[in-house]
Length: 335
Image (cartoon, rainbow, N blue to C red; front, side, top):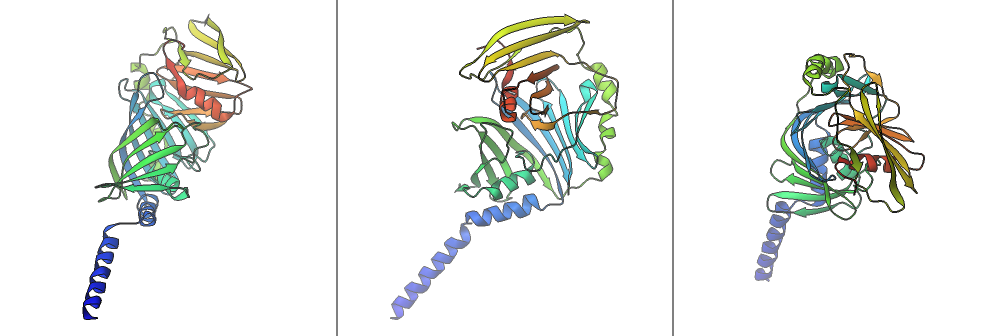
């Protein structure tokens, strides 16, 4: 009898030690929510790779966030040194492209109700919201498989979030398409929690001060020739039927017409810099393309990238499909 009691006590101790050494999925999710979502502010830097084009594209990302609703996201293309900023302050949401001396203003609730993998508060909400969340525990990290909440990114439904066990901070996020292929990878280089900025630090005017200087040094002119960009999507029953090049007032514009079940028109021309610092109202809503922000309505989407202005119009595409086409547009030959 005495021996049985001893064995029972040993068994209890082993169980308790095992329980203490292994955090449950619920514990991990709770810690993530408390640490990432409840911090009064943060700063982070990350590297983002987008793999949806012919060749992977790399970007540096810097984020400021101060509760409740102040954000500054700075995205810079590594090989071209072109920066785009997304700023949210008391006045609304702004997209600033310093090299073009352009600022667009949206009346939007971005980034609420939308997955943004480089915004760790929104990432924590994704993890907490997924009832089918799965977690694997490695030697030094947890890997959580969570659904994205983005209604904009068609075909990017799943994200793998790797969390460091010691710091409980994010190490990386991989966003996958329905076939399980990586579309976007974000690697967090530095995350500082508890860092806040004054509301005046989020004033758009602060980011416009050097716009004229940057615009003057940017290699963008009205007459500049450019390589035609094409969407790399291969939709059945939709094909390119016409390509026109029009030149007006020294500006070259390419118009591609796609016909079929998901017909649309894609227009592109060199982006033009402006000396104005007055924000231009952008109709519709901001839409995240991964590499930047577009303006989307029910029938169109427009954005700027690589020194080119793009515009897609369609009466047959949903908003999700408009974004899917836009995100796939890349330079090169039509396949």
